[in-house]
Length: 388
Image (cartoon, rainbow, N blue to C red; front, top):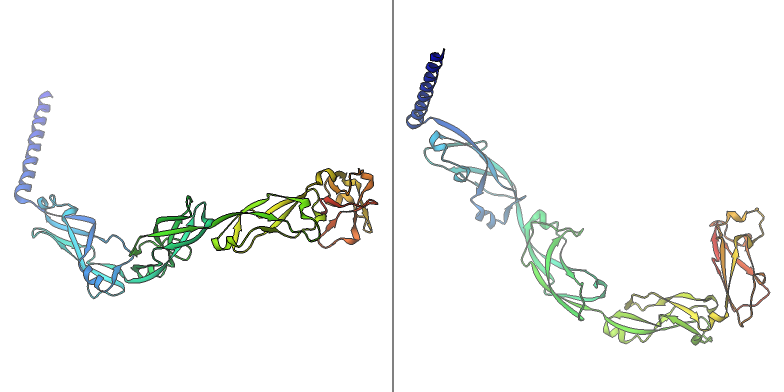
């Protein structure tokens, strides 16, 4: 048995050696032919100068590739790689639209080739040149303080396939004003072609990609507040305003004409303990302050505050038997009374009521009124109007 195993091993070694010798013979002497597939090999367009002369470009731009079969001696195929294969093509009689790119390859005489397809369909677009407006786009903390923006140029020439040029609405120049150390700011800004929605249109060539922009900021000026009362005969010095001055912004010429800012006209009887009043800002200037608070200088000593509960409000002319709980009356109603002297009041001196016949029943809006035998300089009910 052991001798048979030794004999079999010897036979196997002889067979393996014989196979190797035969393979070396075939490779060295016979060298058979074989075919190898190369996929996605890049293709070069050879007549690009002709296309450019006709203002034509390949669009949409994509990698032109093809598949090719190379046939030849096995030894030659083993030496070749994709980098050794140079495929090119030309477009005959190019026109805008679909064209055929006919392919050819540079290869050695020992090798032959065959394409999966002899041509590639490519789309050509007309290259359009156009002058487009540049629009500044101001961003940053001080964007609302900008007076003027002066660009080095107002338009720029662009070039791109027709389909892209038709999408371009304007050229955006984004100006960032996050600093304002001086009245002027100069910076280099990037130009970006955008569509009507403000989105960038990629693939567009600009003659100039960056330009200089000079930003001029609005001037600032601090002016006092002038109180305007509906009754011109009243003494405005009896009232104080907070803040007493505000900062306005505008062009220098416009600011020079303004020495103060008026409040809107106010009835002094409605001021109560205090009242917020809108400011009358001229159209040529702006301000961060839109309103001020006005109050009487001697008001604190002459104002009394009373608090009424919901059930202390009387419903009169209640023909429909409305329940007071059906009305949106708060639990506490504040009444501020300004007296002509330092006399004292009590809740019994004032009664609150709602006249249901005198209110707007369609919108369910009701006014809280008062009755009293005492004369007041002013009375303020908070809230004075409630909704059902």
